[in-house]
Image 1: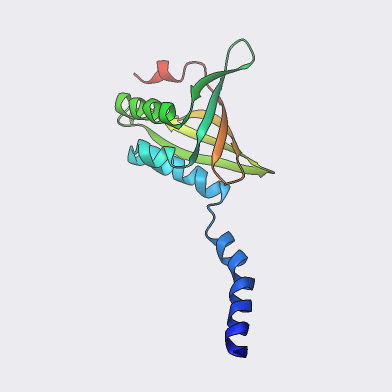
Image 2: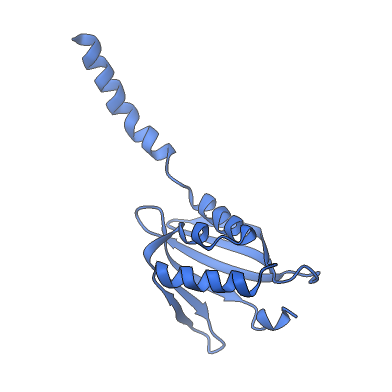
Length: 148
């Protein structure tokens, strides 16, 4: 009986450690997003986001405008983007984690003939479950005009 009680105590003590080791880190989420873009996998991309994710784009007027509302809308948006830009490539330049946010500076090449990638900065806000619940995006004004 003492051995069983000891094993139960050890399991109870180890459970929080083991469950934390199973959590996906913020930087792993960012890397998964970039990998999904490079694999052209919209489903893999959206798996990193909460059901009620909101994506805001920085506008020329100087504020953030809601562009995507919810995981289903995000899936449709990313699937269309990957279809419209089948040769898109993405590379992380910098990651910075602050509290429940991760700031990612990445470079995007919409076509392989572009020598210079275009800079994009995303600020990801994470919910309590470790999924991305909000994204604030700043990108070059003419990013999609450069695709040709």
